[in-house]
Image (cartoon, each protein chain N blue to C red):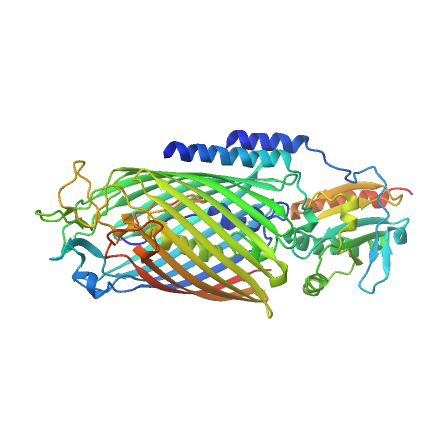
Length: 76
Length: 164
Length: 391
């Protein structure tokens, strides 16, 4: 299982770097008005997202993502 | 991960840059309608030093740059400096809102289709082109930081002082 | 000991827009945020409760954040959290006469406070944008220090933004010696987190992000306030391995739908750890711009996990490895939650609020669950939000 996950991870990273090497960006810098909208942010409201992460982290077994930290006991 | 990063970095350095307008080249004959639908272009400012600022309301450093460019324009208009703002918002209302919030005194034209940034092959937002009295690009200013201003100011000053 | 994390989110918080947007850079103005949240867990249903108080947790949270951009793409960030918590929590689970598990709750309602301070400094170290963070969290029975570094690399040619991070946390526990004895008087644990990810601009309306993360926990990972029931014995202390490694793979999509003037958000995470827990999380949201500078965001979240290999609601005999835990967090279950958020921008202000309902159940799990842990939670939470941008 662990091996599978590592292989999967490796595959994902190599695919992404493959994209990086072949794909020339076709969305030009001046065409990013839509992408700049607040609705399009990964987390339109970072404080709210952090609060929800805290609650979920302390109530569920799973955690992790593109974020550091994450210690804590999550008890009660 | 590290190899991937390194690879991406290496490729970034060798990937083709397109036909970006650079210092030493003649500026493309930019012309676009202003708020009154009158075409305004570089040919209207022949013999002047023009700073072309490509901007959009959704770009934070663009908004930060405009008051600085306005200050330079007011300071040196009498010496023959023109700042020409080229707005690239696809929605005109957004551009109007930004200008209402932070008005500028320099002329602004609108290119919602983005045909001029295409022609200049704009590297980033914002990008500024300092064009001499002879129509040749002196300097391409990529992005904007407040700390860029003194050097840019000195360069404009020097360009204004050049004999035609 | 209650809810606690030190999700510093340093870089993401500082360069939120930049992550999605190579070339558009971070905001130029000082921004301050405040969030108030009220959180209330539903009572254990009568059929599941054995003894003790049925009032579960209630939490009042105040979060404050300020980010001040400095010259030269630098930024200073400060996060403060203050929380007060009260209520009773599940103590142990024992079978009734028919073998159905029943929760015994901790008797008295406790009340405690938590204070968390996080500082962040972000600066460009070519070719990266780099953020360093340092944090401290404290409450009656718990203390934690954390530090981290995050890197971001934007590539304008490919439209890819690479991110990576390394975090460390050192936590110490001193369980309150109350009416009920606890298994330890003092202990500690250390956690390391590493992640790497890439965000890619697919087209003018779509961005995707993929990331992988790894966590390693080492030290006292049990719950000192919980017991496990073993048939024919008096309940024993909750006991878990003193090491835990976990992996998570995350994918995110943001797609703007011009015809609806809103953005579709789709997030997925797969989690696996060496306690043999597998978990899936799917979240879908739609952020819609409305007239009068309003933004409405309804969202749905589904979560499902399998159990830890040493978990049981109660034990018929001791395990040979000596582990025992009946914590609902290690049990097999699924959870559904629904929330709605509304934000209004007024000049430099953005004011908003939201509400969420969360319910865990064996019926929401991906795979069928034989015995549901009777302590699974459901909760309501409501938030008030205010943001001010200095110009």
